[in-house]
Image 1: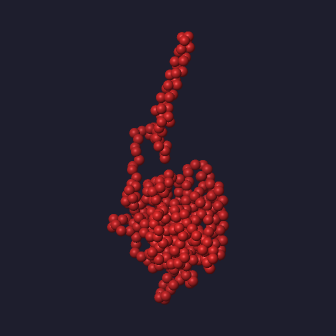
Image 2: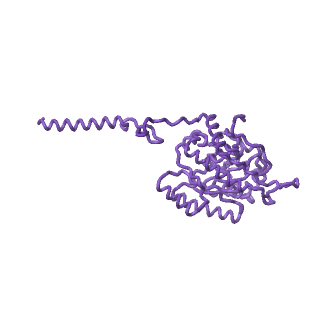
Length: 370
């Protein structure tokens, strides 16, 4: 690890990590983007994070740069019941480890259907793990499958991304009811860390949706919303988190602010309270082994500096915005190339001038009787 890295992780700990699942039953709401960028921002701020890619599509694995590498990961974690060092792959970002999704994960639901106590397999593996990790973030598939159920049963908290549209709102309420059932039966300790609005435009429709959701769920809706940003599309194309691809972008800044909020809520969960005896391995008669790791404090300035550092190493340093001589100079529409061909201002002006000249000549010809 380079000595000039501003986000060097702290020493290892013998306590278990705080576990958070990113979940919604609807696809396309930003679960993977939130998982990867939240993990990267937390690591940039000094928190040691493990991302578990529990989605057979493997988008989090690709976004963290491990696409095309056949290594053991989340399928082996589930089936062996042990979080070993061989299942945690390093990434380009110090402090971020990845338990990747492989091809075998696609058939895991079928295998779990015939397993005894299948919903508790991941919980037993993670609650007994003693690894130098502060927070585990699980990226779930967009359905309440056995994989997602395992993640929710194993977790201390759940974060629910939602886009501002009526269909997503309906699915959010359905997912909310499922989580309440899980809390009342399989995992009474599951806390709802919050609902995060994603892909938000600054327009009346989205503002009205946000007001509706906040009216229904109150402070369970997190104070940070993630704006729609084309930088996210570019980051996916380069297999990078947007907070590294474009650290000064609106989405990256929002995820950095979200990381501070989530870190605060994770810290409240990581108080030193022993877990149920069934998941403890207290062999030395001292402090219970299942006490959670206290989540380190999060420094926004340190995280921002680390993200810029990682961005420069990845070769994605953002150029400064061009400065115009006067505020009245029209700039091209954001996200679009300057107009060219018949749509260019010069061509349109020339065409209009030609039309005017033609009309004048016609009128002049009629006036002189030609």
